[in-house]
Image (cartoon, rainbow, N blue to C red; front, side):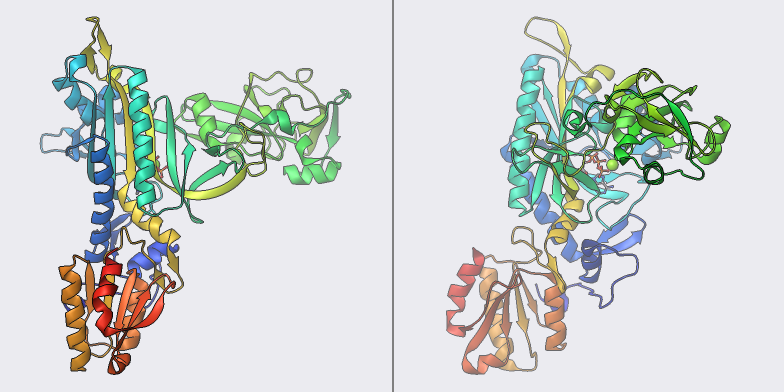
Length: 565
Ligand code: ATP
Ligand code: MG
């Protein structure tokens, strides 16, 4: 490809909407352009990367025996209603009506559509197993679209669905996908972790996420360097037993005056006690309007996903000061003693003695509180968000914490969808049984951004070879110089003959501008043809800075062979 005929509108300045490196560089280097919030054009450079990622994913999915197909984006509401997700999906589902006033949704994922296909076409155990996949545009009206391709409202996903005759077979399919995902993410050159994950709205038995380590990631994970355990903080269990305070003799309950002392830090300081002995009582309003109280040790945080899972709620929020008032409570002084609302206690409080809680009265706290003497919890529950330093649930070593971008998610669905939609097969024993399913997603467009988050410097992107838009960038530093141009043309033609993806910068612009663009775009190999050609030399460079040498132009063939890899 010749740059003079290519479309790569690079930008000198960082667009104001971009905050993270991938968003900044993908915009500046001319890979994407914003159309509306969470909606982007893929320009030719971006499209090339997208296709390369797709092809790597496709190759490994095909090798694993999955069959590619293409389902419609437009999906009828009836299917979503069969599984209840027409309601469950809430505002994230893009809904629309046809001219006959029938409801449709733009597919955010395709469990319903594929299950419908399978139930209509599969009868017997002899027809199974299958793993179907597609690479397709998905739509989700995200609450907070941001960071460019990282969280879009329209994005490209690879989604696969496996159908087996038993849970045992389904686990095999799941394990095969797990291995396949490892192969894919390794070939993409990513530094990632596979972590235990929450099953969320999709539901199912268990699930793993593949998380690319990145400072700007929304996924919070804990992992153990000793035994390899890794989990999303939403699911990571927290080993309370190892983090308990020593037992104490119970002291008499006492109400104390704590004027204007509200936060746990303030209370601990005012009373001169360890923050671990101050228990906060949080009032949550669940989506059905019920209020629940969650008591947790002062140094721990409630994990909302654990909370929602426990209460089987889709949504919950902390009661506002006004809502507290309506419940007869005082902000900053809420406590479990004498409370009308059911109190669920985090396991961090189990076995805690002589602790402090709010007294449900302005400017008062109770000290020396003990369970069950002073109040009775409905249940002890694991609500705590795991964090750095917590003991690993497997080997007890201290956990590390990091952030990342979820690029893949696999679920063992079980029979949740097949039962809801009556996708049954007749087994060997002649009995009708629900098909056992798994589903497997990869965020294809998010992967572009994830790769840039990991591969950039202050000048631009440094693409890994496997997904770079081009492999070789030839810079003709002076287009007026015939010798330079002829040499460039020769190298360009030879590179193409060898099947190297090559971009020749033959634009009539300054050498400085060419170098700037080349750094920004981030093609792995570069051949610079400039002044040194007078001495018969061209320069071979690598964008990652590991190579920069003058070589004899007569060695062009050898160089190209090496670049070809
Ligand atoms: P997240 O927690 O980031 O919202 P999710 O759990 O909703 O992700 P899945 O439903 O498992 O995502 O979708 C499969 C993959 O699609 C994800 O692993 C992610 O890489 C990608 N993905 C999900 N939502 C988006 C989005 N809004 N924009 C870009 N990619 C996305
Ligand atoms: Mg999501």
